[in-house]
Picture 1 (cartoon, rainbow, N blue to C red):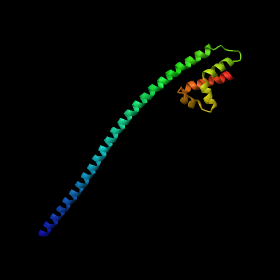
Picture 2: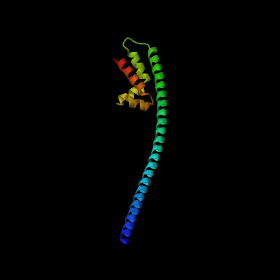
Picture 3: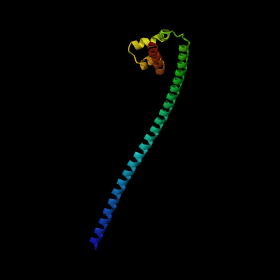
Picture 4: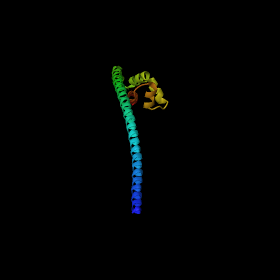
Amino acid sequence: MQDYLNVALLVINFIAVLYLVSKSSLRKKLDYQQELHLKMLSNQEKMLHQISELKGMMEQSQIVHQQEHEQWKVEMKALESSIKSVPKSTSGGGQHLFLNDRYKEIFDLQDQGLTAEEIAKELGKGCGEVTFILQLADQARS
C-alpha cells in the first residue's frame, strides 16, 4: 500500500512541477506580450506626433504655394498690361526690344543654357512667370 502511496505522491508532485513550469512559461509570455504592447503604443504615439508635424508642414507649404500663385497672377497681369501698352510696330520688333530690355537677365541666363526652372530659382521669380516671358519672346521673334 505504501508503494501506491509513494507512486501517487510522485504523480502529484510531477503534476505540480508541470503546473509551475507552464505557469512560469505563461507569465514570461504575458510579460513579453505586455512589453510588445507598450512598444506598439510608444511607436503609435511617435507616429501620431510625426503625422501632426507633417500636416503642419503641408499646411505651411500650401499657404506659401497660394501666396506664390497669387503673386504670379499679379505679375502676369502687370506683364500683360505692360505688353499691351507698348506700341506695336509692323514687324513686331518693338515688342521684342521691350522684352529684351525689361527681362535682359532672364534672356542672359537662357543664353547661358539654364532652363526656365533654373532661371526662376536664380532670380527668385516664379517658374510660370519665367516660362511665360520666354514664350512671349519666342512669339515676338517669330
